[in-house]
Length: 245
Image 1 (cartoon, rainbow, N blue to C red):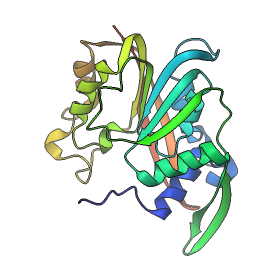
Image 2 (image 1 turned 90 degrees about the vertical axis):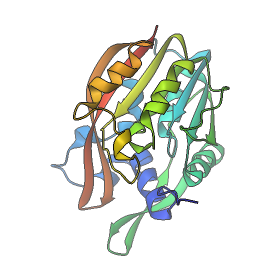
Image 3 (image 1 turned 120 degrees about the horizontal axis):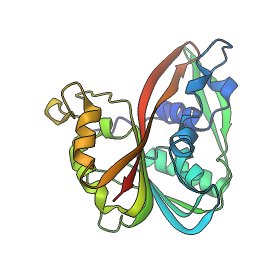
Image 4 (image 1 turned 135 degrees about the horizontal axis):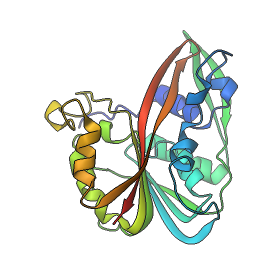
């Protein structure tokens, strides 16, 4: 069985910091790119359309939720939220956060020195649940959602088009799809023949989704993943909101 690259304790700490770390923990430099912080909340709240009121009878799906911060943000607005990720470690962490309201974790500072931190999920009213799932094998029960959120997922899938072809069946008519991706095509995740487009992935995604969705909004969403206190991954996702027609 092929090893899941997201099942490691170091990466778990990295993602807990990315999702829940305080700004000064992630970026202890006054001249750093602060606009790239708080990505998990921005992929929801800067893209979503509609009322800021909590809607108890609504439901949302967060695919590729990792350790769950965006799912908890969705829980501020939707009555039921399902967060799904392929990583068992990530989902165990998200469920522990839901149950215990915090996780103590460590993150790399330098060499073999680690910092200590506490992850605390954002406040929410909705029922947020987490389960291990595969975006390549979506069950029929994932359907009729008011909103589907998929951030930085499609360029980590073996077949992103297969996933995109399945999305129309998950979003109810009039519902929203929030999609963000930096188009980081790597053969370790996606075979070259499955990469979308030939230099213009945006155009290919629009071609795939346009029979079912109208593109309502697009923006650039920078994000920052800390590897240690002097080394970061800085990327820019194409953030979009699509309306199911």
